[in-house]
Length: 408
Ligand SMILES: Cc1ncc(COP(=O)(O)O)c(C=O)c1O
View 1 (tube, rainbow, N blue to C red):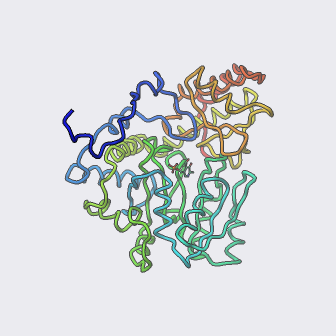
View 2: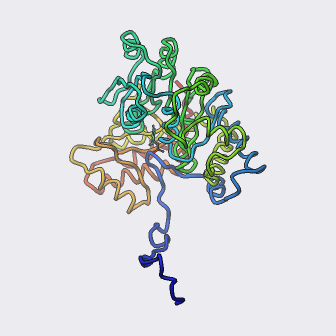
View 3: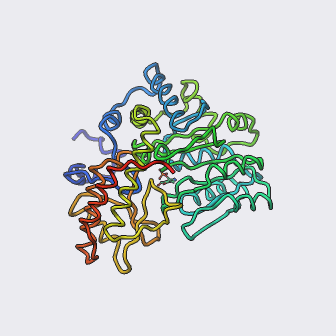
């Protein structure tokens, strides 16, 4: 060894392990609450690195924004990808619309809707909650009451609360009430975007957020946010110092609006998102909503026909992530482990709740994935002594997949 080469290198290299030793031979089928499986086109795009600045990337970004605008149903051009999970995009919405002295009403029904309150506190806003801990949605009347008592600058809410499987049924109505009372609205559509209707302009949302790894069926770690043109005018007039540099929407717009350097963009993730959005546009939203609805309803019918109970009543059940009760005394972790060991299928547990959750987002809503996950769940339960009629469940799944379901 050349003498002196060890200088500044006192720590020896670690023993390494190739990824092939760590990853399973056959990748698990991801049927949990996200991330979800990705298509080949998305996977291929995710393997490519190009310069994040220059003509080729400009074209990608231009397309991506047009396609994301379709997904969000907005004419706004203030759409940007964020190098970070959906939480990073949510943080971008919060930090650009809230600061000390601004008042926010947070509708909290679970982990993710509550997280927006934590973020708002983080930027020094005055935070009030309407909170439900009984896995029921917050409705329009509750919001109306809150606005009678106090004025708010911003309202935050989730369209689908993934943590417990609750849908905000009055979502559009709540946006209307907030706007009538002079508040801007930040909507978390992370698990719902492109799985069910969401009309940003028509409903009047000021910021809408999605993560790559859910309804869009792209990769985790790159998310996408849309600001309304009104919200944008407000952001442009901001006089209070922005505490975040990466999440500063005006700085971000340098890249997303003017093809200039902000930070080095997450190129493979953006290319993957491009392909995921292209597939969504090719499928069209109405077709995609219908595929999700039929798939989720058929799965739900199969689960019930097997003898398991769904956690959320139909009237406010989220179709994008289906929460399932297990019989008393059944250990959810053991069921999930058996599904992995026997069928290479993964579903989710829950944060503190005694349920398991099956995702119905993007590529998860394909017939072959439904048959595999339902059979795996049923068989794993039977293996652990739960008396289920697996065949009946599979039959009902098949029957319901053949019946088109009209949106309600
Ligand atoms: C509704 C909802 N909001 C926000 C998030 C946070 O997403 P991420 O983990 O990508 O930050 C999730 C993730 O599960 C979610 O389901």
